[in-house]
Length: 141
Image 1 (cartoon, rainbow, N blue to C red):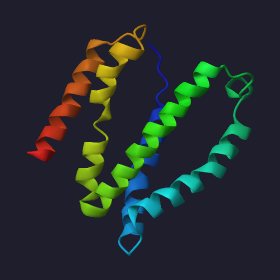
Image 2 (image 1 turned 90 degrees about the horizontal axis):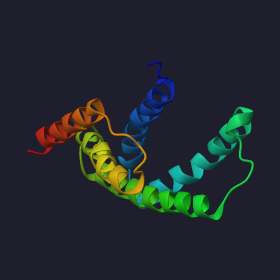
Image 3 (image 1 turned 60 degrees about the vertical axis):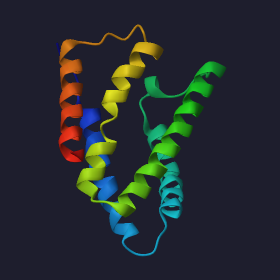
């Protein structure tokens, strides 16, 4: 099976840089809430640049109300997640905080069964998710 994993690896690279830069910014007296706000505002121009430069098949043509509300919910959960993540970065070690916060595949695996019933969960995905959970257990114990 031919899978293109370049986009997820590029995302992982970005997610690798982000907490290190954020923690470095928090070493001073910047509160996590202010840092989160600055980071979110900084993402807006980059998102627009990406949207403009995307291939034709990825551009927005028409949006349905259900999609808008689901993505709005995603934004709300992402904001809470990012805020609590940055608060944790202020208090702890980046390597441990990042590993624990990036254990979300465990929650994804559970939530997919309820919200995306047509998505097939394969044995390799379940096993990899269990390894993630095992790694988080090692860090927190």
